[in-house]
Structure formats: C-alpha cells, structure tokens
Image 1: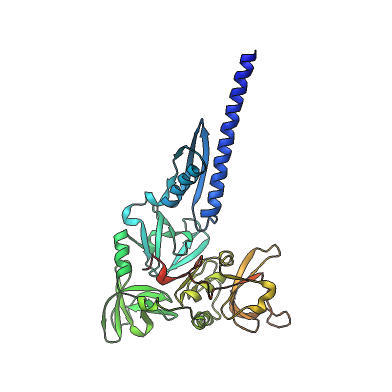
Image 2: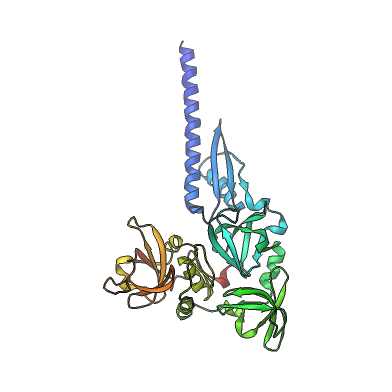
Length: 381
C-alpha cells in the first residue's frame, strides 16, 4: 500500500510540475506579447504553449521572423531548456518576388478582411511601400510604414523583390505636393494615365521643358508639370513646419468623412491628422487611439496649454479615445467629424463641440515611438 501511495504521490507531483511548467510558459508568452506585440492592428502574434514531460512546444502564428526568434530567446532566458518552437512565420512563406510591394493606385482601399465587403481599415497612396505578410490569395495581407496591418487586393500593389525595393529606394523619385493632379500620356495632353493625390511618389524617367516623365510602380508612365511635384530626396529633408501641417489640414475644409480614409481626397479623423503631418514628411500612427499614446502628453483639462499643431483627443466617459483633431489657437481646432470643419473647446463658444480627454505634442518628439521622419524610415530610403 505504501508503495502504491508513494507512486501516486510521485505521479501527482510530476503532473503538478508539468501543469505549472505549462502555465509558466504561457505566462512568459503573455508577457512577451504585451511587450513586442500589444496591438493586433500592428503585429500578428497568436501563439500558445503546451507541455509534454520537460518539453515545451510553442505553436501558432506570428508575422515576422524576429518575433519567432524572440519567443525562443525569452523562454530560454526564463530557464526553459527544452523548447520546440514550431511557430509559423507568415512573411517567411511569401515567395521572394512578393515579399514587398508598392501601392500602384492613387488610393488603394485596405480592409480588415480580405474581401470588398470588409470594413475599411486604412488607405494606401501611390508609391507607398508595404511589407507583404501573406500572398496566398487575391487579397494580400500587408503592413504599411506605420506598421498597420490590413488586406489589399493584389491588383492594387506592384510586388517587388528585396533587390527591386533597394533599387527603388536609390532611384530618383518625385512626390506630389499639391492636393491632387493627373498624370497624362504626353505633355499638354488631356489623356489621363491616372489620378494622383498629395504624397504620391513616382520614379523619374526624363523631362521636357516644364514637364517631367514619371513612372508608376507597375511600369506605366506619364507626364506631369514640374510645379506640381518636388524631388523626393529634397522634400524629405524638410524639418517640422507646423504652418505646412495646418495649411494641409485647412486645404481639406468641407471634405466629407470616410471611415478608414487616409488621403487628401477623403479622410476619417485620424486620417486627416496623418495626411496633414505626412505633407511635412512625418509618419504618425494610424488610429486616434494609437496616436494618443505617443508624443508629449497634456491633460485634457489643461487644453489651454496646447500649441498650434498639437493633437487633441476625444472619447467617451470611460476614457476610451475615439476621435482626434488638430489644435489651431484660442480654443479652436480643426477635425473631421461628418466633414472637415473647425470647432471650439470653449463651452461658452457657439462653435463648442466636445471636451478633450488629452492632447499630444509632436513638436520636440521627432524620432520617438510612432513619430518618424520619412527620411529616417528604412522602407523609403
């Protein structure tokens, strides 16, 4: 009887140890995810741990190889000696010729699901580089320079190898600096090749008088007046100019609201902020709730401390951010709510609309998380 009891105790202790190991490994992965992939909008990290004996097996899916490597290192650092890292890396499965892409439409709709009926997530604009995470169907799962993940029709991007992307980054390019324009078949022609929006990037192929010959990422080409564009490398050298940021925002006055809109034709609230700052060569996070996490923080109750160009965040009584605008002065701000318009933070003002939860200052924060000059982003240069 004693022998049986002892055997049962050993078995129970072993089972308890295995259960504890599994729970501990799960905790390690949970903590790792909170550090390197806290937001599913910007990272794919769907993994779990299972234990058999002294071996921990990790399965699931991540977007990038560095995430899989981080799993192995983290478990090893926490004392797990026997780890089978069977996690699938989406980007590794993409064929070499499709690992990267460049948006080849003036505006490409990017959705939360791989179908036209899917909710709009964001928009890509001509010449925007993307990393392809999944190219298994007609809809590619891609990541934009602000790390945002969404689905885009394969026909909306021109796929590139790493070598082709390097050549593109080194090529002479031009960026559209006006609100919108057309690329035409020949100088003085009315025959349109494509429309373009503010921030569209094309490759230089030649010039003739006041006209430039530019190529789209898919090889099509056309002509545009020099006055409508600027050489991309020169444009990217600009430093923060809040007058330009706010001029861009005001140029969109009266434009309608589109959920997921991120172009000079139509935006949502955070899209207006992104487009305005991108015109100054600055990449911000995509959504209002993400933008609210970065920059120099200002309490909503102290909005009178805000300066020209600061971001104002609004939301519900629980503190959830759902809206963003740009501070002008004297309590006035410009935002996209129904349309792009100007309202006031002062409850005594007839134009009053919403009180802010918080504010963020971009000035003085360049190079911090999710506040990046285009010139410093490795996908562009």
